[in-house]
Image (cartoon, rainbow, N blue to C red; front, top):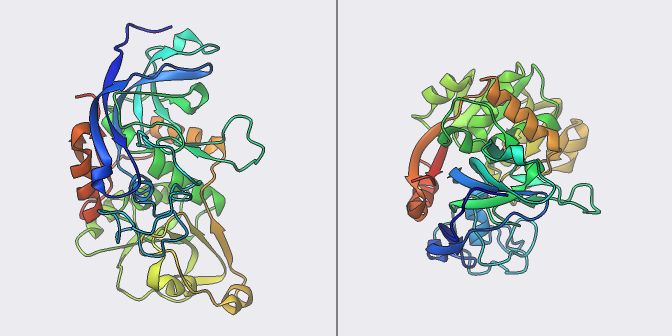
Length: 359
């Protein structure tokens, strides 16, 4: 069931692991057809995320030990094809784009026709149907084609209706970054406590500021000079320059997206019984932990990737209630995705770089 649909569409495909030259603009891609239980979405907007870049470069490969920027333009020559995607090997060509806001234009079998015309956000991470592992995950734009094309498909359950007067551009900035941040916050059960957020001007960090404030936390955001005012306008109570010392034992929770050489100081900034949670390692994944610190100070360390399905529907509820404010730094047309990624990698922006697919 559908409106009349074209046979072909424009989009950007990733043809293999490597540099920006692996992203190829195509105008002859077949428009996908929704399988049973799926919906077909006309994409309005997508956004750029670290995971797009890390997947393209093969950074998730255990053979890579550097920070995410070191191979971001050219890829990692040693990235293993067998484990370069975040959940293992990737299938090429692949349409990336973990974020998607768009309109349902067709439905597969077993999906209510009334959904046609509905505006939706796609859940970026989902548990694959029939998976044995309760924490199995597949990501939109990685294990299946994503939002960097004019049309895409998603499971109906993962296309969540969003009732908001925002344009497609603004909600498209939210799914990946905000669900990652909310997943971390729910994992450590953050309350009205003192939280330290690293990488606070990025997509996940700026989301975490707002979502932590929503829960009554006192937020200290680590950033670079010149970005503090915007982060305070989002709700940060204090900002710290990323070279400034951290006060020892001052925080209940550290929400870390950076890793790298200052990791030990971050751990020392936690009070006894404090909690640390990570979902990224922009400054480098290899850190040194003194296990005596961990046990003598009764710390808890959490990794956060898997999200219960409710994290995303909670987030859509916050959007509809106007409790989060999308922070769009800049928009690019889809065919300029490479340029958008180059700007993303310069890290001069605050918030999200969004891809306008409707044009």
